[in-house]
Image (cartoon, rainbow, N blue to C red; front, side):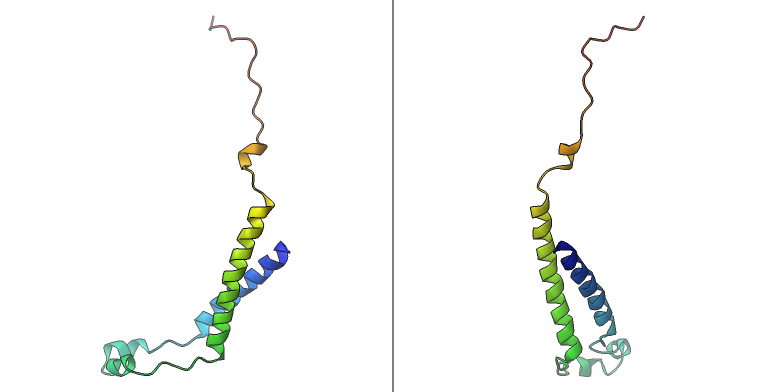
Length: 99
């Protein structure tokens, strides 16, 4: 179960990165400094197309798998790493000072 969640998490992560990079910006960078910058500010927002919907779905999937993986890892082990360390035995006889 945890392996399946991890695979879904990785695939959603990679796909989300790719989809964000594929999306076009709200306006061109040259338009900010030019005369058309005021037109971009008051322009209507773009439609919520299929790429935006898929990006939102992948973001929700990534969020949910992150929470589920956190819950699964907390149930798996609740001890400390130091619990597994064995300490060396203390010497029984006191050491004599240097001769």
